[in-house]
Image 1 (cartoon, helix red, strand yellow):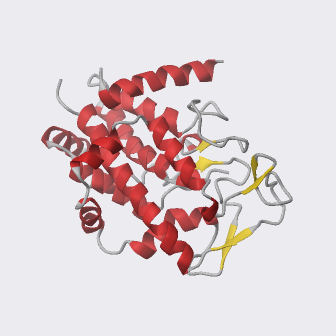
Image 2 (spheres, rainbow, N blue to C red):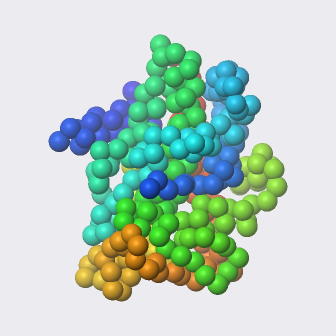
Length: 288
């Protein structure tokens, strides 16, 4: 096998070798729907026909884009929605799940294997289609490639702007809703209209572990406000290396300037995720 599928086989082998030696939310519903609608619009005839066939079997969802919220409602396979990184890590590294035996990267490989297995039941393949759409979205949410102790920014407050809640929610919901308005199908069309064939080729040539590395590069940008650099490590704040439950939470200013600076990054991550997911499905669901 070649391309994305071949790389995923390697990913599964490595992940198996590594494994043998309160959950947080990812993109809000709108973000996940946009990603999967972009992917659907990227599908060729064969893949689109198979996706439609499988979704018609679903008792709840009428479209692929809507089905991608399923793993969050209610939460399913909770430990597979994210990947935790050590605070001493300046880059993502080569381990599939650096701090646990389960993570979103291993989940992607698991459901790629089921969806690509033509002998698997339609029930299993439908479930894996919905999971895979969700997992590809999750790994592109920067705060899902982050630190366990602060729950990917859920234990960091925000103040001073139009968003509510915590830093994680700013990225998965507030900035998406504040910048992308309208029907999901039209949003997706607008987001991919300027994507070139060269960009598609560049975005889809890397395996999912590289997508996680990209997310980690984003979440550790100083402008994001997620961490404090001290003693060659990413500290929670100037006085605490890690956050402990029950302690006072730090907060950062999220104002119009913050959203203007980071909003385009959110849009780019959604677009990348959708294009990459579409390429995945085109390979996985093509006829032999």
